Length: 283
Image (tube, rainbow, N blue to C red; front, side, top):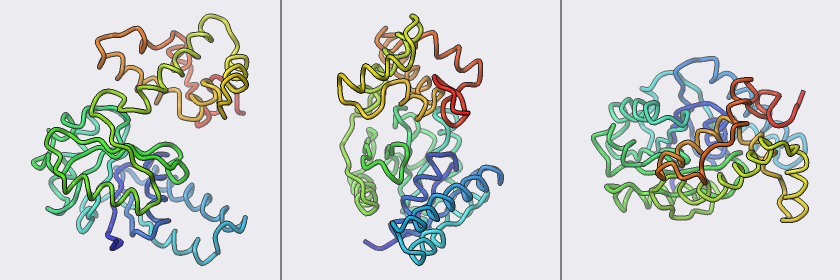
C-alpha cells in the first residue's frame, strides 16, 4: 500500500509506541501532543529503543536512521493536515477523547479516518464529538505497541465499511493481526484479562503475597507473567481505569469490582514499573 502520512495524537507510552510501529513499517508519522515535554520524552525513548535494536544487530544502522527519520513531533494540531490516518492515544477518559476528536475533526483532511486506541470506551460516544461518525472506529493496540502483534478493530454503529477496510489495511501494513471486536465494554481482550488480574489483586488484598500469586499462575497455567507482574507492566492506573469501565458498563457486576489494593496503590503513587513501584519495588 502507499505509505500515506499517519498522525498519532498522544505521546505517552502507547502513543509513542504506535508512532514507532508505523514509522518502522515505513510510514511518515507525526506524533502530536499538547506540550513539548512529553514529546521530548517520547522522542528520546523511541530513539533509545531503535538505536538499541541497531546495536544488537537486529536492524542495520541505515534502517535505524530511516525509522527515526520517519518520525516528527509537534504541538500543532495543524500537522494533522495531509494525514490519511489519525490515531488517538490519549488517557482513557471519555472527556479527554471527545475533546481530542473534536479538535481532530476540525483540522483533519476530509478523507482521513479517525481511529481511537481506547481499550474499552464506547466508540459511538467518542464519535459523537465529530461531524463524521462514519469515519470513526476503534483500533486498539496492546503495550508495547511495536512488539505486540494484535490489534482489536471495533466498529461504531455508524462506522462505514470503507473506514473499516482502511483501518484493517493499516494494521496489516504494520505487521499486526486483527480481530473484529464488539463495541461493548472491554471489547474482547480486556473483558477476559481484567477479571483475571482483578482476582490476583483480590488475593493480595486478602493477604497473599504478589510473588506467590504470580508463581502459582506461571507454574500452574504456563503463563509468561503472573497477574501482579502484568498489572505492573501495563500500569496499575491503566488496569484500574479499565476495570471501572467494565464495572460501570456491566451494571456494577461484582466480577469487575476492583479489589481494595488498587486504591491503596493509587493513593501511594505506586503505578507499576513506570513509577518504580507497584505490586513490586523496581528501584
